[in-house]
Amino acid sequence: MERLQKLIAASGITSRRKAEELIREGRVKVNGVVVKELGTKVTGKEEIMVDGVALSKEEKVYFLLNKPRGVVTTTDDDKKRKTVVDLIETDKRIYPVGRLDYDTTGALLLTNDGDFANHLMHPSFHIDKVYLAKVKGILKGEQINALKNGVLIDGKKTEKARVKLRKVDHKKNTSMVELTIHEGHNHQVKKMFEAIGFEVEKLTRLRFGFLDVKKLKSGEYRPLTPKEVAQLYALSNQEK
Ligand code: URA
Image (cartoon, rainbow, N blue to C red; front, side, top):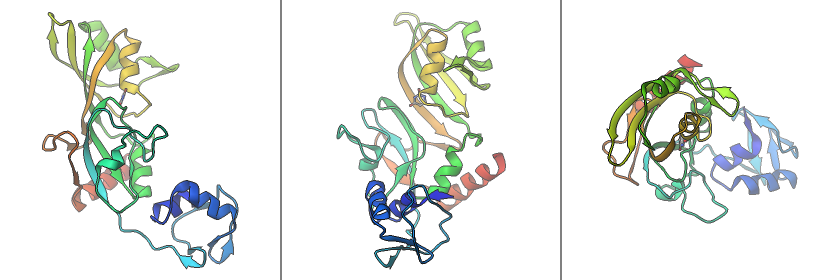
């Protein structure tokens, strides 16, 4: 189920905010009945009309982006900074699946398929996300074990993670750590390191599930193949 305004926006005719206005103004009908309630939930199977015109179901598109630094993961930034959506040439109204911080790089999915995005962002969807973090300081065994077993962030213990110390640079006093997690709390990786007293200097997402960005340069993207989309759907149905 989705919110009516979200579905209208996803059809590509207007923004979410404008869709809300249309609803409030009584210009939207669901199965022939005017709906003015903003939170109304719809399945997508209803006949939705805006100003008497039926919404057409937009073709679904899926992209894998190698996100560069200095780009926000949103569709529309208040401060008018460049967004991940600006990097992708499409006439569809796409949005990111989850988020990477402004200064985080790497694998990010974008789509106009709300069901797909909801599936993948559902907290119980256990897909591995692999990050490489450059942190200030040299990690010791006990700190690596703490990350593996779970640390407290925002009062909650993180789930088990896989952690590999890839490299240490004693001269520069930095460590490169590969961290595999399946949760997706806000700033999770940075907060996990903060919890053990380390600051992340650089962060990149190497993989989202089976998708990596090795063949994409920073800022480059490619459409997912139908097989990849089907595989992700299959994974999300399995693991919920
Ligand atoms: N964890 C973070 O701290 N930042 C990201 O961008 C992704 C995961």
